[in-house]
Image 1 (cartoon, helix red, strand yellow):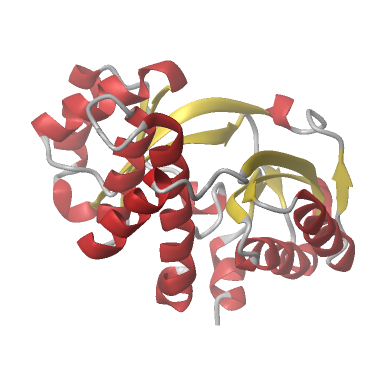
Image 2: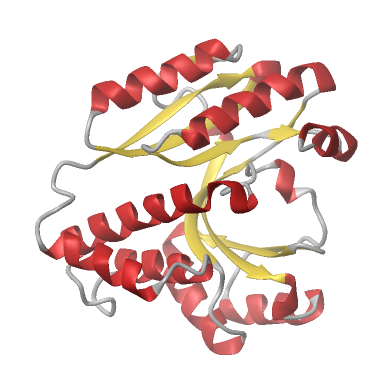
Length: 248
């Protein structure tokens, strides 16, 4: 298992702190509604719903909001939502994967393509960049959940493959098929994680200089701001000083 790494440069600032809290809640609610619609309201028999609710709780989403989203799914809402994956390249040759949950494919395709075009990227065909990533499970804990050694020990016992820790927290990765089993074991050994999600982990990262970094971040921010976009993944590596400057 690995120790420290610059994982913040691999999956871009999901949620971007408090600035998009309401938008984040809306996306979490959409996932809960779809999961409830597809698999029923019983979390014991619906792993997707269980994970969606767990992630919502990890982001301090109010219980009433969670139950409202579950009930919407049972009332028939969410029928028209379609999951779509877009792939392309951003500035500096960075591979980008965009996961969308939408009730209007044409709108989503147009918005995603426009963002890539505006910020110097190029949208490709499905499969054009995903071969450079591995599909894995990702489990996140805050730093206060335990020391790096304690979390690593618990992760090993749970059957995880990797742990990355820094002052912001712990990211545990495991096989995609093992995600639910590992998350359950970690919940018992540590506590409930902030989030449990399937993710796209880059096999290698692409160094991006300051000139390209600004347009790349604008592309990713534009994608994350779209209501239909659930997740954005990219394989960039940007110097910490440059990231700090861009965040100001």
